[in-house]
Length: 434
Image (cartoon, rainbow, N blue to C red; front, side, top):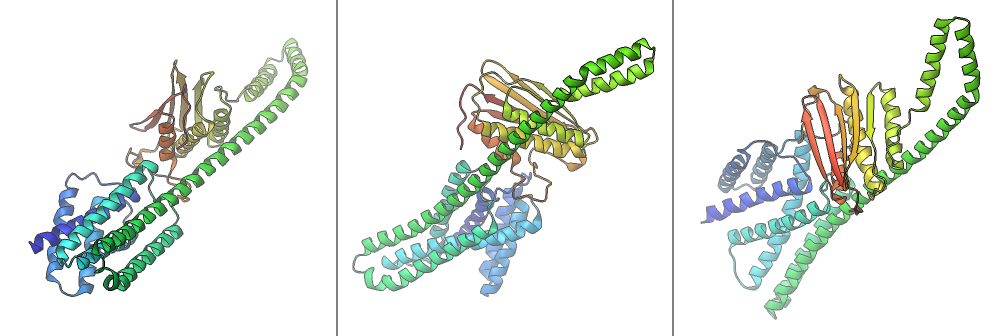
């Protein structure tokens, strides 16, 4: 029975680690149908091995090594980052378990019940319950988890957790003997409330940090949106100047063409006419699909594509009445075009296409590009290749959030060397920011 309780406790402890890695850090699981069996077997092996060892230092070493191996088996990410991240997760989970154990042990002391193995099992179950509750709230609130939050804030969070643990330990040691036996029920309720208050506080801190991160991200997108609009209006202003200049000189150009034709200078006529046609095409090379903010983003993308020698095709038109917010349109087009540009630039066939269609209710947006097959792109590995990962790598997730806020759907289709994102939005309803 003792071995069973100890082994079950250790398995639940491993589940805690994996839950934090999955729900909070958003690590990607490996495509291995036997990974769960491997994790359980390794957990049992580690538990039996630790049960035979008496030295606490060796026990700690075995525990850390086995946890690291289990995480590496379960998740498919950079091993170095995974090892460092798992060490932090171990510290956090261990302290949460200590909080739960402290509460269970205190209650056990008050009611004069002592069964260490059973109490440890109950404490781990309590911690696991707390981790899952906060994790589910976090997933609904923010799909990216805490992976994008800066390290210094997690150091502060860790410090708050240590302070709470010390406070509750001191509270138990000072008040247990003096107050517990005067009114056991009141003391159990009070101390349990204090521990749950700490858990609520820690959960609130996590959600607050995530909320701050979301606000910062939205500010960044809004700033980009405004910058694109300013650049677009400057672009239109310059285009208007060029058009006025061309109109001013058009009669002279036509007169000169007529003269060349009459004089029989056909070769010079062809060259001069070709130059004028090129000038007219340049003046008309602006994007207009019926929405200013999208026009701004597409015009900038078109200019960037020309610089990178990428062929970019735009077709279709937005509906006259479109109730989708500028913020969500900016988020969707800006991120998808950035990703498409980054991929097409490395592809052999440098081409991007944007198609906009609509019916009486829905608007369908398709943005596609060719990519380099050697990058090994797939739906489960849509990560940025840019060095500044604090502000990049959120693209697809941001698009998903905006599509969801607009009550739409998004589909990613990868065919050989083509990457196609299709978005369907209900343009009759107002999307609500999340």
